Image (cartoon, rainbow, N blue to C red; front, side, top):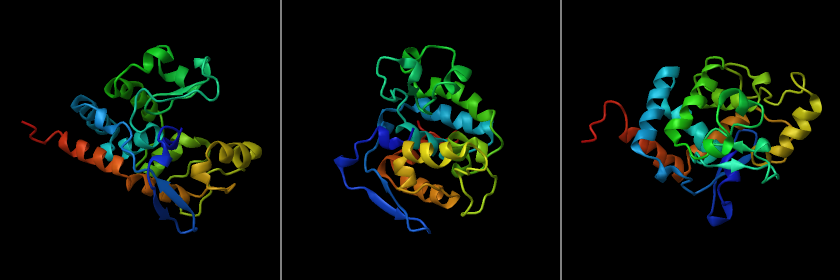
Length: 221
């Protein structure tokens, strides 16, 4: 579930980054929950990146997009008293996926630290095809059935030939309005622009500094 579900966009003026297709994506000026993350959290992110052959910048950007880097983030999907229908945590594990990768109830999981949640998240990501960019990981989380490694910018992400057409072009856009910007078709280039807008936000800039501060070779004494 995108960061926009957790950040009040009305609190400040957003950034606008325009893609080659003319779409614009606002990146919130909020810092999300980045400032509450501990050194242990960032060190765990570094360790996971090394295990996956990735970088904390790639992994962290997706976590920031999903939840504002808040391990307590939850989307109740209109059912506040039915945890079975919630999407929860840093990576917004949703029903079906959650049960496959997490072995505690959701209320307990929401009390876990970032470092703790990176355990099941890391195992989930390790089950994916090899990825090298933030776009890859976003796409593999979002619509894995249509994923194309090294896709050109005009490749359709919600490809109706690779999944139920109504789900692809109606349900998915309606559930992700800030990503689709009123369109029924999303391209890989649109995803690039969306992620670039998030990368431009002050919250992510703060996260980058915290990642750098906790690099394994950094002298934090």
